[in-house]
Length: 133
Image 1: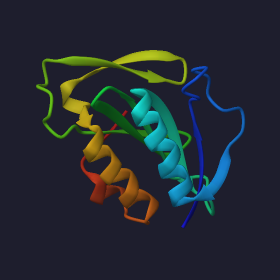
Image 2: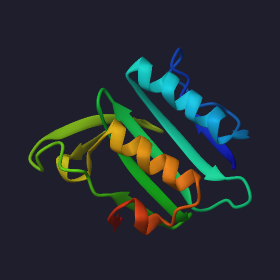
Image 3: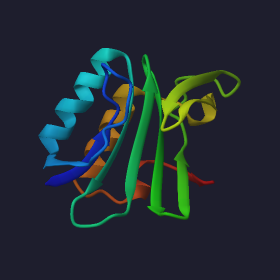
């Protein structure tokens, strides 16, 4: 399956100016590179449609996922319980760092599994519980 994606450059910290189209392995390779760098932000979608669009922001071993079903429909994936609801983490997003409570934080391993399922065509509901923002 081919995907369209963009990601923060781990060297500069800047979001790529243009979207990249590649097979799923190409995207997952870039994601792995970001994971090794310790933090990052990515957006990915299937090439044949603009939406849904999945975003993943992370720092260290934890991250946060958003799903855009349309430009006006943004959802946040509930966390996997790896962090207590009372703990917060900061992760990079498009315009700097944002703070999220443990309610919406998941391990990068869980996020990788969700991203893989999304790329393979799984419906959003299969990835977990989404909260509309």
